[in-house]
View 1 (cartoon, rainbow, N blue to C red):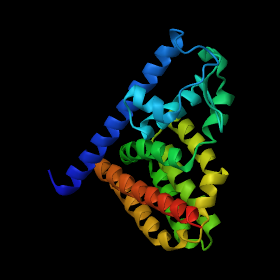
View 2: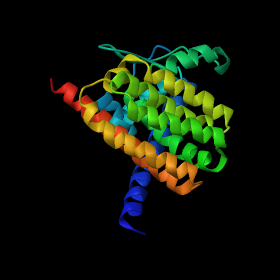
View 3: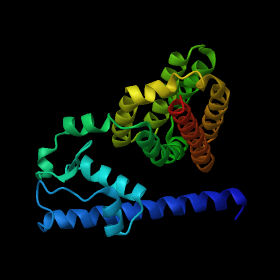
View 4: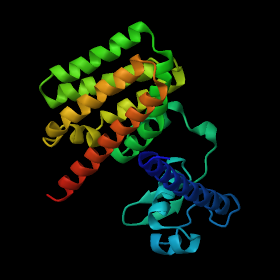
Length: 249
């Protein structure tokens, strides 16, 4: 196994272990709620104590609490703590409510789900994209290169990724990604897209767009997935860099 593959394998392993720990934590908390150990209105212990009680790192605890809040099992109030919510059946969660909750996702949440979806989608696109799909993807690549301002670049960048998703022919994937796109229009991601620092990163993004289009048009599924993964790593690094820069000011 070469160095690059070993590094990717290590990253995947760490990511898998982290999410396994989150899943275990979520199950334990749900069991406490379901059995009445933690009844509705119960105030959860402070994060430090709860992490120690459950035997997890605090970042794992925060991920788990965020998931539990998203599923409606707990409510979190700044300055007051986390409380067990009145439990609702799954039927009470309308599509509209789920979408409203999803599009308020943070930039970190958005990039995490994109890293999961887009490399796989790129490999499907390499297998399934029609001639017209390839024309559309190429046009988006060219538009990204031609526009001069960040707003226009962000628009065509989003269109590029949407075109790849559409070329898979998977309607459910298209719907899921539409929610991701809506999330990108919210204030958090939009502010990052328009920071002046992003100008210096554009050439690299444009080159990765070209490489991804080439892999898809050449029907190279593994290469398409690898390029998409590399591109999203670049996006994630840019987001982390601009967030850090913003926090220092």
